[in-house]
Length: 210
Image 1 (cartoon, helix red, strand yellow):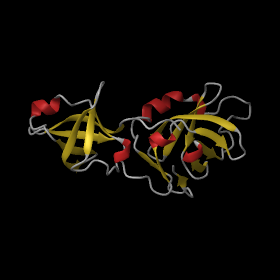
Image 2: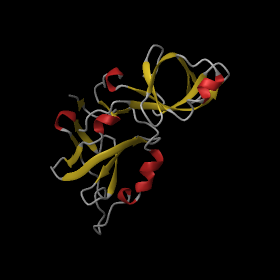
Image 3: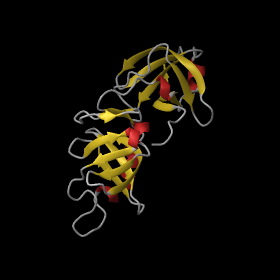
Image 4: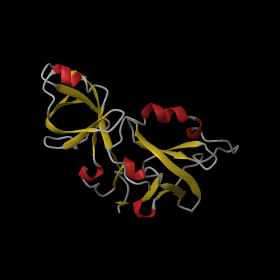
């Protein structure tokens, strides 16, 4: 498992709201509870995050309306549009049983239950149905692994391993060519930034944590 990043992005500031400095944040995880009043956050664009505090937060359709300390005008809010709202990993709530944060999965070695090496997780993204791990095979191919019970057997964070039970055709089809999932690398780019906070293994026995 790779070292935890200094900041974890929870959402993107997509536009202003009203004239008093509120901002519309599109959360990467629609169900997030990590942004709340009093939470220290970093507003990240290209360089060092600007640290501030969440003063107020309320839901508005699929957005979170954020009031940030020191941002009290439309002009000040406009300067932050396009930035990401981030938190430090230690400020996140501990992952519960059967849960793991996305950043904890990145870098894990993926192996089958029989011990066959599959590759390493490069990123995780969310679809409407479930979470998906993007795994880079040793030969350079990209494989998309759905994070669902029939496939995911165990998450061993202390061993830096994700154990899977591949369904027929997942690793290769009958002719030995890359599977359909591996032939669609662009799909990962389409979805991978929608959620980077936490993945719930609802049906898994338990995801072990360090």
